[in-house]
Length: 423
View 1 (tube, one colour):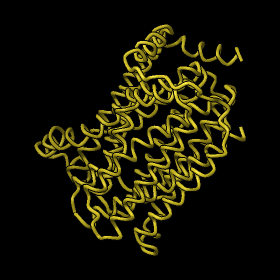
View 2: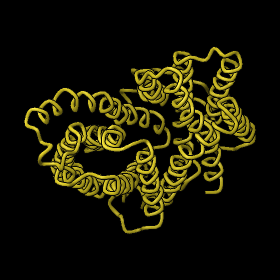
View 3: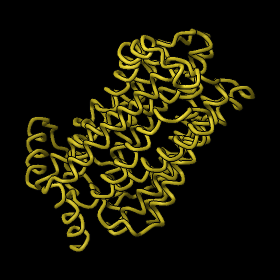
């Protein structure tokens, strides 16, 4: 576990620098271009490439030395930060330059993240998988809490250029330490990547264990409502309140992530992770459904954000530890790649659909029937988003109940238990 903790610390250091830079570039874009489209494109560029390329990345990782992959990924991402510093120095930074560099850094982060994930297989025993995944969630939750607080303060004190130098320093530190880090595995022979062959291997593995294909379908379906709910929180808060309230709600959501990670780390009572994910998603669905019956204010929304973040963190820990235990190490990268594109595509789709459904489907209905009288004069968009949350809650609950009854999926918990006992 000591090597795993060191590896995680290094990844968290570079992630923190990246989070500071990402948050600050978003502020810079809104202040210098006043374009919400540019802001949205930067956010989309930060996640889309690493999701859409994940099968290729997974195939690559299963063949190459993961230590070298992480070092090169960090180095290239650091070069991206160097280019940003050059652009700021010469006063030629623009939103399109930012989008292009964020795209490249996103690809690098895809390689780094998947190489890190697969490398933990060699550093963490299966019996400690859930604890390791909980510690991961705690670390990334701390970054999510601190980055939005620290970035604006540091931006005012040391400017954008100073923050970029901090980001560059985090890359330098991690690359230097990784040069001396032993992952406990080697890749002496470099084999040619064959996506068609790899896809055949992955799907043959998934079909060999009945229920795995269906559980991936379940992940996709439930990630749609969860993704929509997450992306619509900011518009919901800003419609009835202001940026300060949004910061408070997001920070409390971050505390929920941290609390969920701590709970998953110390609580040993969850023996069947697949069944627990179904139950937690049903609970989340009921919470979302209740929104339409509640008078939304900053306090209530903060509580909802905490509960959702707490539950989603536990779900992530259970899902990651389940796959960590059952997948053979020689297939880790490829299975991770296809799992990422399935789950991640749902998130990307939810980002695109959330605003469309609210603006063009639910909001016209709310305006036509004048629901303000039933919702204590809340703004129409707030009411529309609340209705969306309730519909998403119904979808999440019904899908989870339906999938929980499938026999092949019930056998997945036995597969998990058997894999642990075979150590």
